[in-house]
Length: 148
Image 1 (cartoon, rainbow, N blue to C red):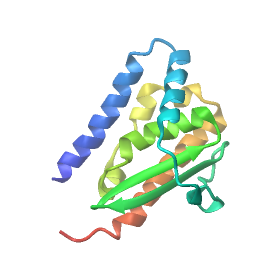
Image 2: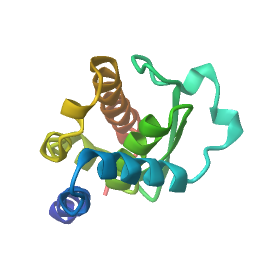
Image 3: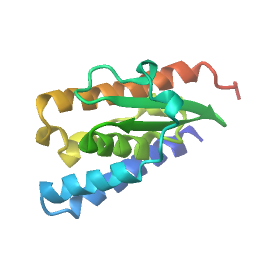
Image 4: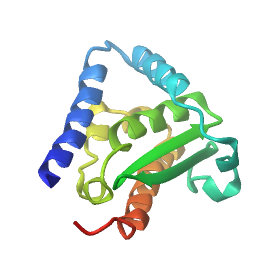
């Protein structure tokens, strides 16, 4: 059962990598990320407070997570369009996954699609902060999982 979840995360990572592989240049990739950000479901305004801001991001990024049926679901928003696209990619991969599988997953797909190398150093640091926040939520919610 656990192996199926890792495969689900890996499959979502592969979907992201495949989507990026069809785009010919970084202008198209940025446009794609902007579109992903626009399609991100709205975060409830009660979570757009300082308590939910991800520290270490150049832009303001808010993230909230909740546990449902032993799976972690994320919502997020940003005041910057590229950053919103980046968080949309991360949510596409990690939302709906079990916390322990999020913690065990490999985030190298980000390097494989080349996002970091096309971001300013401060935005690349922000990307790292977003991934850390997802992992922190996974750690926090892991303790709330019902034993099987």
